[in-house]
Image 1: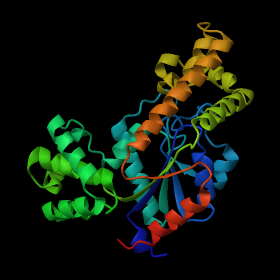
Image 2 (image 1 turned 60 degrees about the vertical axis):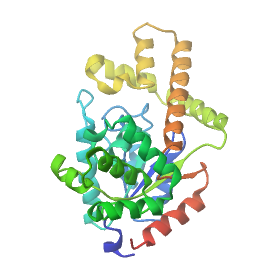
Image 3 (image 1 turned 180 degrees about the vertical axis):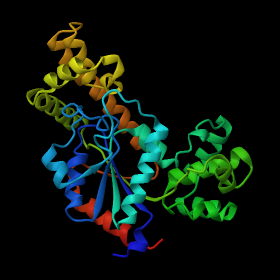
Length: 314
C-alpha cells in the first residue's frame, strides 16, 4: 500500500448510539493499518468510563484510541479545540504511515470536521442554501465537482471527488461571497484543513433492534457499576463543574442520587433520552450526502469499500 497515495485520507465510522461502532472499528483495525481516533464528547473525560461506553483498559491497550481520557472531569472543552486536536492527531497518524479511523456518535464534532472547521460559515443566507440544495438534488456529484473545479481549481485539490458535503460547502461559500472559496478560506482561517474522506454510516434496518440494543447496553452498564461511578464522581467534584455530567445517563443517575427521581424513573428517563438521541443521529446521518450506508453486521461489504477507497489514487 502506497504511503503517498493514502497520506491525506481519513475514514469516518458514524452511527447512532449503541450501533456497534467500536466493535466494528476494532474488527477493521485487525485487517488494516488504522489509528483509531474517538469522536465522542464524553470519552474525552477521565473517570467517565461506564456511562460513555468507553472500551475497557485491556481493549485500549491492544487497540489504542486517541482522544480518549485527555480531559479531567472539570475541564471545559470547545468545538474549536476539538477540531484542532483532531487535525493534529490525524496528521500524526499520517506521519507514521497509518490511516486515521474516526469513530463516534458526536455529530456536532463530525459536522465541524466535515466542514473543515469553518464555523464562521455556519450562517448562510436562506437563498444561497436553497440554491445549493437545488443544485445538489438536480446534478450528479461528478458534475458538481467539475463545476467547482471550473470555479476554483485550488479548492477541489483538497476535496475528494465524491465528497458531496464539502462540495456543497464550497459552493455555499462561493455563492455567498462571489469569490473563489480558496481565497475566502485563506482570508478567514489559517487552521482550515481538508482531507480525502470516506464516510461510513452504520444504520439499523429495524429501529426496534436498535432500541433492544440500547436497553441491553443500559442494563449491562448498570450491572457493571454505572451508579457507583456517578456517585464517586459526585463525591470528588461539584456536579455543576463537570460538563459531561449533563450528558445522557450521567444526568439521570445524578438526579436519582440527589433524590430528585426514583430508580424506576431514572431508568425510564435514560432509555427515553437515549432513543431520542438515536433518532436525531439517524435523521442527521440520512441527510449526510457524502456517506455510504450499511447495516449493523455488513462487515464484508464495509471491508470491500475500505479496500477500494485505500486503493484509489485520486
